[in-house]
Picture 1 (cartoon, rainbow, N blue to C red):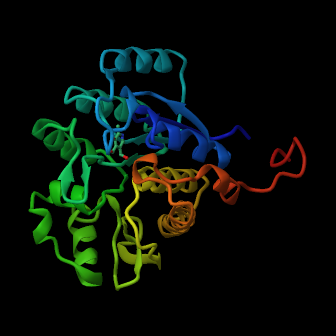
Picture 2 (picture 1 turned 135 degrees about the vertical axis):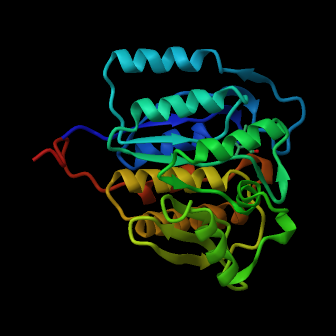
Length: 286
Ligand code: PXL
């Protein structure tokens, strides 16, 4: 049995804990090999830092994908997130087409948070993200991204359990695509995800107690755990449960140490929570 492999198409931000600096350690801790295809290199992420550098990797991506194809690589999942240019929309769509095989395609339609679009995202990129997300088996929007995908103002989104249910179902392309809506709160003091599972047609809220503070990068932590758990064969709601609980643990710790928001969540000491115990070097092989 070979270790499952995920093609992870995200930016690499040097400081601030998001995207690949989150996806690589989380997938590795879950016993999943992460094969990064960086969309951009930034000195820091764009949320709360001034003067960050931005190296667009658009031209490199098709070349790297062509090499992967020539090697006959197969992935258990293709997992995309923050993109660096509008041109990357078709490039990532091509990569999904070429490598989806019988794996799962997770598109985190990263575009914004808290009702605002991220600084490097153009209207063209947001429109393109809607098309890219049509290729996904599973999407993981937050409420801001859900509003953009649905083409409605953030303030007009329905709220509460029935509202989150309606959003998840409306985003499902008439039941063809699974949706894990993040930052979905069904009652005061709780938060988590609202999941529409295309394989069962059911919608279910996965909730935990809310840590009363804002955090940066939790969407990337969430989607990475979810992707790892799906690759491990968990159902959508089991995977969402694992992601909701891990994000809550990270949030609790981050609040306890008073980490500035722009530094992301202090997840590294908690990676052990995601790992399966190993008793010998040949564990899982026989
Ligand atoms: O966490 C989403 C994200 C990913 N990558 C970069 C970002 C952000 C959010 O601000 O700036 C570079």
